[in-house]
Length: 159
Image (cartoon, rainbow, N blue to C red; front, side, top):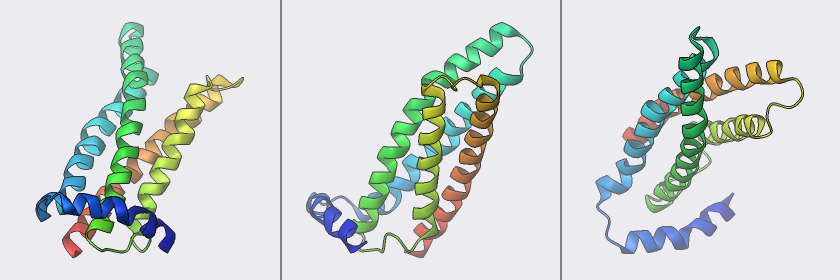
């Protein structure tokens, strides 16, 4: 995977040339992604589950609309943050693929992509089962996001 590093190095070199202070290069990604994971991710997960289980139909619909509106934005921020995290590692001359933080981030994005595709295509013919799969897959992704944050904090403190 030296090709990935080689591919990103010119972009990282350009960012290095901007003279961005080291604390921003080092902690910018964790700070911004922490907000996405803990605030946006928690809200998206909460709204999705609340839309499934609350008895009041109006409250359920309101939560499902919030979930449907914010989940794609969350995925977009996660994908952008993933890219930013890779660039941050390259800018700091750190290995990319050796960290469990890299792998949990990759798995989270894959889970969110699959989950988004399930929803985008209307949960197929078996709406009940696939909606349940969607709920638990999303919860698994959210749990993994929290683990990812812990691994990222450990990584940030180690470099």
